[in-house]
Each structure stands twice: as structure tokens, then as C-alpha cells.
Length: 266
Image (cartoon, rainbow, N blue to C red; front, side, top):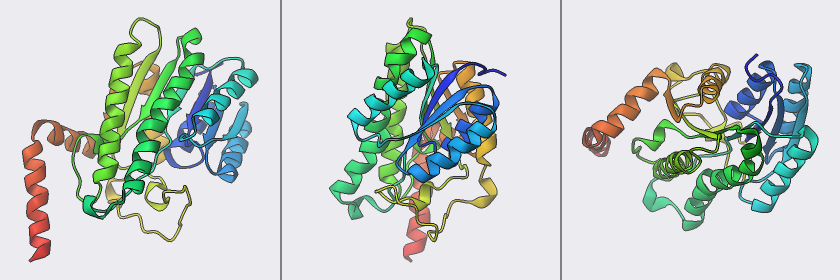
């Protein structure tokens, strides 16, 4: 088992990709700390980790609060004795056209997805440096391409990508690796959670179901990249196509969406 004897931390570990990452780390031999805003979800995942024979810590934490992040890392170090893997996964999506957003909603999007992830990395590094550990940031294919009515989310993931790439440069020679992970469509509750972290089960997830990857499959791919200390990974077939178009043919991506919107307005 690749992560045998490792101590890991996953933010946003109560549901979706975070939960899948936590459980897969446990299957591969790690003790796992999970944090997030919903204590009931964290407790349920902690029980699943323990059922796999590994130690678990469920630590409620809001990544917008730097003091909470610092205390969470201190608790992990005290209970596990070290930290080998930290994955900044906590995030959510603000939808709607740019002109319909309030400043508060936009700031909250950036505060969680960018600032919160950066501060997660900052505090995790106090424990990752001694172990020459692995740091992961969960981005999105949305970092590479604009999407109508998703401008806030795309901006946040593009910003997160720059945080990950910059950290990879700044930490060169320390032994700590930084891997930024960009999934395409993966099963999660991201489109059903509001700005306050409240889950609305009745909200429809409008993402294409035929392109959706199971979260456990995504977790295995992500942890493999983290183990190999890759700098960046874009995955799912459609994710690779969208990211390539966004990077190499951005004008075409914008034009295609413009034409689609013009048709809807006729």
C-alpha cells in the first residue's frame, strides 16, 4: 500500500471528492484527518475510515478562518505525530452571470476557493517540511476555460492554479512536492451547496451525467499523481479536451459560446 504509515489531511472531507480521497487514503494505509463545515458529515466519514482499520480525526474547520486552520494542523500533529500529505480540497461554486453577482458573493467565492486553499497550504507546510511531504490542491478544468454563468467559479479555479504553480516553484529543493489536480465532471454535491455551506438536496445538478466520473475512481487517479509528485494533472477525457481548447484555442471557445447564447436570445 503506497500510503502505508502516512498521516494525511483532507479539507472538505465530508462529501464528494474529499470523502473519496479520505477513504482511498485509508485503503492505501494512511491515517486520515478530515475537516469541513458540516460536523455530521465528517463524523460519518471518520467512522468509515476507522472501519477500514485506520485512525481518523474529524475536525470541523472553516478554511476562511486562519486561526481555525492553524489549530487544525496543530491537532493533527499532536494526534498523529506528523503530517505527510495535505490536500486542499474545500471549495464550492457560485453560479450566475457576472452582472448578477453581488460583491459579497464574489468575495466569498474567492475567499474559500483561493484564499482558503492558500492558507490551508501555508499552515500544512509547517508540518510537511519536516516529512518532505506531499501537498495537493484540487482545482478544476474550469481553470482553463471560461463558462457562461460560471465566471466567479472559473476565476477562483484559475487563481488556485496560479497558487499551486507558484508554490511548486517556491518549494523547489525543500523536498515538499506540490500537485495541482484539475478534474472534469466528478460526482459531488458542489452544485447543491450554498455560500454558507448548507446542502440543498432538492437543487438539480445540471452537469452532464453521461460525462460524470464516480468520485472513488477520481480519487485513485488523483492520489496516484500525488504519489508520483507530479506538478499538475488534468483528468477525465472530456476534461483534457476542454482544457486543451481553453489553453490553445481560447478564441474558438469564446466564439462557440457566444454563438450558442445568440441562438438562445433569438
